[in-house]
Length: 560
Image (cartoon, rainbow, N blue to C red; front, side, top):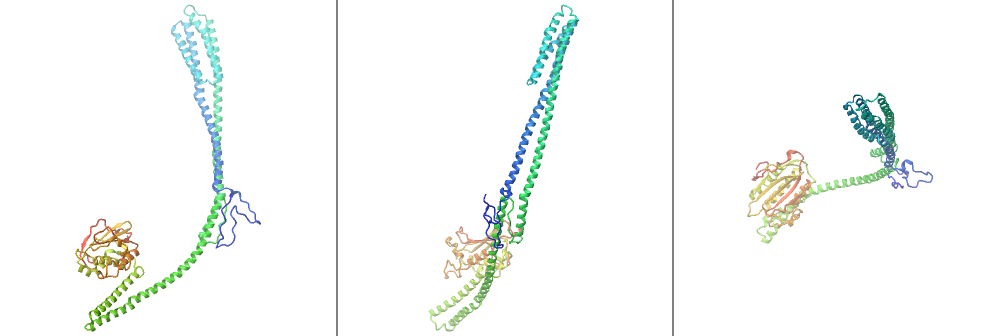
C-alpha cells in the first residue's frame, strides 16, 4: 500500500527528511517497511482482539457443551435414577404385602387378610408403569424389571392363587407354605440384582457429572486465562506499537508548540500513526511558512501604522488650519462686506446691496460648513472617551443647548422617567441627541403643535431608542438618502443647514456599535430609531413598561 506523499521542503530546516513508506528510497540506503508499519494501530488491535475473541468463543462453546452435559446428567440422576430406586423399593414392599396377606389368610382363613394382597397387586401395577417411564431408555434395568414382574406373576399363579383357593375347604400343609415362601424368596433375590444394577447406574452417572464439572471448570478457567493473556498482550502491543510512537510524537509536537519550529517530526509506529506524523510535520512546515509571511506582514503593518500616525498628525494639522486659518479670511470677507454696506450704503443701488448680502451670507455658510465638516471628521478619531454614560445626563445637556429653539417653537418633549446607562463617549452622545431633537424642532409643521417623544426598550443585548415627532415627515424612498452627508431634501430658502446632521448621527451610532434607521411605518411625522449596546450590569436596565412622562423645556440637569 502506498504511503502519503513526502512533505515539501522545510523553510526552517532545509535538510532532507526520510521519505514516507511507499516512496522510492535512495539507492545507497535501501529500506524495507518495518513489520509494525504494515498494519495500522486499529488493525493490530483488531488482530489481537480477533485472536483472543476466537479463543474465548471456542472455550465458551466447549464450556457450554460441558455445562449442558452436566445439566443433563444431573437431571437424569435427580429426576430419574434416584426416583427409580425409591419406586423400586416401594414395588418390593408391595410384593411383600402380597405375600404377607396370602400367608395370613391361609393360616387364619380370615378374608380381611386378603386386602393387602389385592391392594399390593394394584400398587405393583401402578409402580410398574411409573418405573418403566423412569428407566425406559436403560435396557438392562428394563430386563431386570421384566424378570421381576414375570417371577411375581408366576408366584401368584403357581403358589398364591392355589393356596387362596384351597384355604376355605381344607387345611394347608406347612410344606405348601414353605414352597410358596421359597418361590417368593427367589423373586426377592431378583430385586437384589436389580438394586445392584440401579446402584451401578447411579454411581456411573455421579462419576460422569463429576468429570464433566471438572472439565467445565477447566474450560472456564481457560476462558479467564485467555482473557487475561489477551488483555496483557493487547496492553503490551498498544504500548509497543502505539504508546511509544505517540509519546515521541507528543514530545516533538510539544517542542514545536514551545517555539522550536526547526525541529523535524519523524514518523514511527503503525501506518496510521505514520500518516498522522507526516500530517503534523506538514502542518509544522506550513506554520513555519505562515510565520515567515506573518513576520513580513507585521513589518509591513508596522510601517503602515507609522505612515498612518504621520497622516493623522497631518490631518490634525489640517483640522487646526481649517478651524483657525481658513475661517479668518471668511470673517474678514464678511466684515468688510458689512463695512462696505454701512459706509457706502447710500451710494449703492439695490442690486449692489443684494450682492453684498450674498457675499456675507456665503461667507457665514462657509464658516458653518467648515465647522460641521471638522466636527464630522473628528467623530471616532479625536476626543473619544469610552466610559459609563447615563443617557439621561447627555439628553439633559442636549436639551439645555436647544433650550432657546424649543421655547421659540413651543415644543413639548416627552421622555421616559429613566434612561439606561451605556458605554460610550458623552460628548458625541450629547451631539447625537442634539441633532435628533434639533431636527425634530426644525422640521415641524407650522399648523401642528410640535411634540417630540423619546422612547426606550431593551432588545436582547442592546437598547433600542427612538425619537418621534409630529413634523413634516420623510418619504420612505429617502430613508437612506437622509443619512448621506450633504444630502438635503429641502432648499435653503425653506430650512437652513448643511445636510450633515443625520450623517453625523449615523457615524456616532455606528462608532458606538449600533445602527440607526428611519422607521418607515410611521406616516404622520418622523421616527428615527437607533440602537446602542447595553451594559452588562443589572442596574442599567430600565424597568419594562415604564410609562413616558411629559417634559417641558428645562435647563441642563433639571427634571421634567
